[in-house]
Image (cartoon, one colour):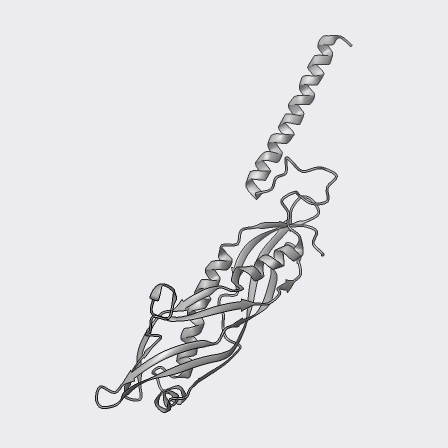
Length: 238
């Protein structure tokens, strides 16, 4: 073989190798993987996280999240009630502070044709709701309403496809949509506020306040989980 033939072969080999690297680089951009730097003898992509790390991310997304319920105005039993009307939130903002807690998430990776669900138990620290009331005449006062014993479950759903190695690429689909309380107890030591909570009418009854306390963190939690980007998880078992 001539030197010229040898050089031509080398060019062909380099061109083919270069094309392979470009293709890998394009795939890296599309799926946020560092495929080019991958060592072919490694079992996982360099940027992949483990399953325990992935589950820890889900927990950390909401665990310790501090929120502020805005003030609420309503009426019942002939009274006007203002709830969470004191400057109890950071920076002297009016509202009722609350803190979300999350336990350890669990779940399994399903075949790519089905979404995978990962869930964890949750609680919310007791919510203290300063309240003032007036009938527009001689009767007015203040009380404290408390929501205690709150529990709920957080769930996230991911679409899964193989990551081209020994792991899975997880793209978030949705959060379960709410922080609906599975258990909660609402009470007040004040007789008028207690009567308001016990009354089944259309005003600020107990279920109304619980529904209000559920809806606000639900939106915040949904936004937080939506902010989680796709991940390559490998290995799929601890």
